[in-house]
Image 1 (cartoon, rainbow, N blue to C red):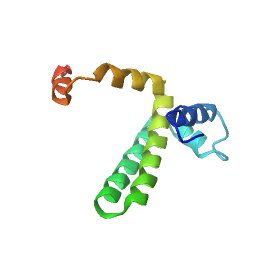
Image 2: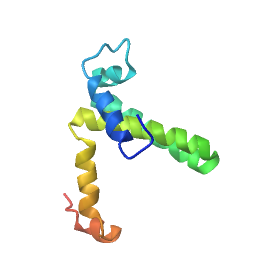
Image 3: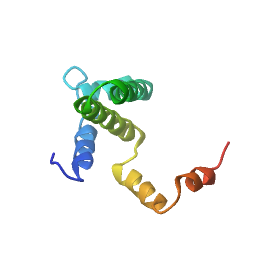
Image 4: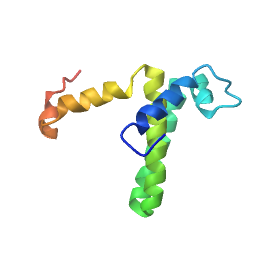
Length: 109
């Protein structure tokens, strides 16, 4: 993986390649084996750790926790059949739209 805009795409490809791998030898395979609830739980835990780092720790901790969040988010995407390109397309669709307008345009259940 390089230090460019394709890093998340490359990470995603590695994550997808771990589907069906041995959960005893791959943390990613273990997450897939445990299922969506565990993946979502881990993402939430990492997001909380990022929040704590942003409030009480330094820049390097925020970077490290951000990487953990992106990794676990990518695992969740792969489990759900969502690709980074799907997310990039949604961000592109929102480009130029006020955050308030975008939020108000969402339908509520």
